[in-house]
Image (cartoon, rainbow, N blue to C red):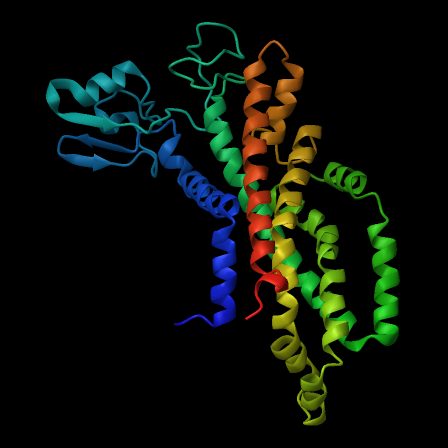
Length: 343
């Protein structure tokens, strides 16, 4: 389907911002790689051939007896004895991922006490529990991005609907809604998040719901302003005079114009979600213990100043991720800038 001239100009403006354009490709590449984290960092082999049969330990649990062992317990493929049984007399082979640890695997063969410095076995070292830092960064990056992505999506939906209702109907609806938002936005968000997260055992969806209570307000003012302006335009008045339902006028005729301002704010809401989740994890009120978390890695860097690779890894991971998103947001803002899309 051919794009309209306006969308073609917007795409050209986005590409013209080289910093944002290449940041988008780099970010997408990192995100796609992190989606396959189990194929890159895993303590289970990806594929095993044993006696002309294929096994996938990364997807299914096998017993030691399945490979000629003596015990009916889950197979430990890092055990040299089991590896010899599989590869004995050329009757099988093992395909390992690039990193032979997942985010919870503890390396019990460290030459020094944990946290251990970077080595050939652990490229970014280990944390104070002996877990591979690079594996935890990959898994933590994925969790952060997915969390912020879902949060941005639901926040945008709620914020757009709330702003549309306020701006379209105006009057007492707008007045009462604005007073509610002023009171709700005046609450100390971080403290409330800490209190609520301390009442129950936090998890991905629970934290998402708590943060959603406050993050939806970011778009309300922008959408409300667009609807206040759009409801008095001639084509809207004509549609209302013809008896077109209010919901259809709001979401079919006015909303497409309001989405321009909405899309320019979404990358920054995305950034805010990542930063808030990292802050909660750093304070110990975020994801459950043991979860791959960049905030928890920062906390470990603070508690282990003699292991600078922990703090530096967390710093560079967050800095690169947030910088890429900011550059993408700037490019999106340029693409939808009305001064650059005039035909």
